[in-house]
Image (tube, rainbow, N blue to C red; front, side, top):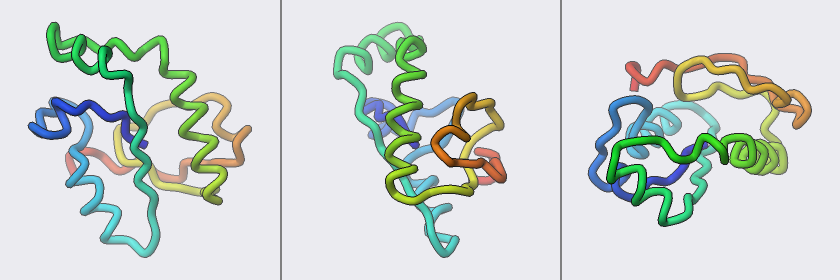
Length: 107
């Protein structure tokens, strides 16, 4: 699940995390995979790039729920996640289990 940031996505300026291209390349190496792109409100992306802060922290739980519901609807149950290990409370409520984290340095 990737939260769109048009500036960083186009310029590939990620200090942490992964670029869309690197994620898609990694997913293409395995038999099956899902890349889910969620769109931010335009003003959030602009504000983040003005002072280099993350303004979506208050929206994390809502975004998490939307992403988890879409993955569940697609039939995702056990999955590997691109990115650093992170606790996702309630993910099992969607019937989803993260079996492995793939470090962004491997991308």
